Amino acid sequence: MWKLLSVLLVSSLLMGCGQTKKTFPEDFREWEVRVISPSFYPIMVDQVYGVNETEDWTVYASGYGHHTWAKSELNRAIKYFSDYDGFGIPLHIATSTRGKQNGKKTLPESVYVYWASLAEGRFYVSKFDLTADMRKAMMMDDPETLSNGNISHCYQKNVVFGLLPGGTAKVWSLGCDKYTYLGKVEPNKVFDDFGHNKEYYNIKKSDTEKRAADNGVELLPIPYDKVDKVFEYVPIPRCSNKALWGCS
Image (tube, rainbow, N blue to C red):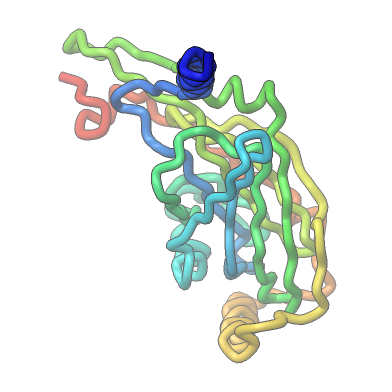
């Protein structure tokens, strides 16, 4: 009797594991979180992580560091948007900073970004919840048949945060050379100073003020009508990039 119960228990556990195991296409890569900011209102990122409460995991993304400062340079944005004024979000992969996580392919249910708004001397926590419908769309394959007959598979599974002074975050999904606007959120938490890493953040705050002064810009009061603008990226057809998409 006990042997029979043991066999049934083991079988039940194995069936459960099989039901929860997820399979992904061979070329499927883990999701990423990118951040982007206006040139005159640059940011620094302290930490980013995704949470999936259903599966009981938290995954941290890393690699932001000083890169957010370099990616927010005015000349970099103007290279892709000739009419860019330094205030709005220049929505382009070259002006955003990528954070990588360690191989998790299942999407998070919520993404948290802890970040410093250098012009203001404030620290914000942004939280964005990815609904079931959003995650379903982000995991949907968008295949393309290349001119050589091969199939290019891609997924709009990366999350982009446009971080604005005042703590507002605009959020997009990114993939397949497309941005899809998901919504915006107000800060989950606000701190009136930088908290830790004050010395480093204060140095970058001075650099921010100098960047504005060199361009004849007053940072405060914040011109919210200007920072709310998004300079939209117009994608190049995927097969025009032979190195990336393998077009013949």
